[in-house]
Image (cartoon, rainbow, N blue to C red; front, top):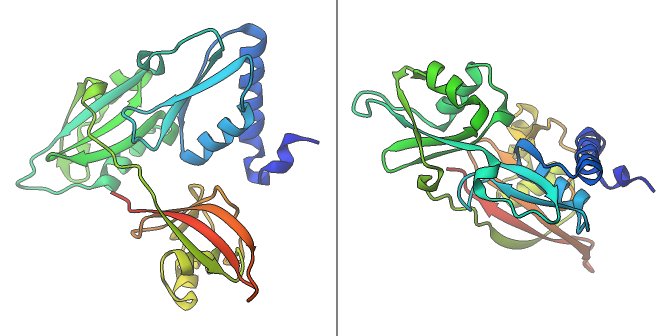
Amino acid sequence: MSILVHFRKDEHAFVEQVLEWKEMVETRYERKLTDFLDPREQDILTSVIGKDDVVHVQFAGGQGGCERKRALLYPFYEQPALADFELALFEVSYPKKFVTIGHRDVLGSLMGLGLKRSKFGDIVEGDGLFQFVAAEDIRLFIEMNLSKIGSASVSVQPAPIEKMLFIDDNYEEIESTVSSFRLDVLIADMYRLSRSKVIPFIEKGRVKVNWKTIDQASFPLEPGDYVSVRGMGRRKFLHAGHKTKKGRYKIRYGKKQDP
């Protein structure tokens, strides 16, 4: 049986990529450092590699609470260090008394430079500044080209990765029951909304599943899926249980607020 049957069709290309990375490490005994992966991609990679005798994998994106991380696949006899993940931390300074910038402004400006989302990791706000992590190979490009975020002129300075601000990555686990695993049904329960309010969010592209916009209310969710409604935080579908006597399914999900 192909391993692909355990994943959605739109995830098959990434699964096949992971299998290629795994084979490369197995046959050449060479490391493979990936770009930044979102949590769903990290879950898939971990699942595909499993407890392999030859190929091991570690993740790093800065400090422990990071969401987006690079993966390092390596032969079992090696012991990777943080430096092997080639992470570059930047601090953004701007005239706070005169302008306000937000997470989306930083993200938009980085994308506006022509960078792929996979080339930089988490964007963190705190202590009156913004920080973001990028791949070391684009450090110079960012230093030379990122001079404006939103309407603000900014100064971008490299900083030691050890000085990255703390990120709270804890999910509050909640148990509930639902009538089905449809997207609209689960969002209504997870966000404590009526289904009549949920449908417009989905139809207007404000809902993402595993970082991809989903506009179909009937889309079926599976344990392990990440769900977000713009401006309302993120949830992770953790567990689907059996039907109760009343014909409802017991579920468990994690609740996390966006920064």
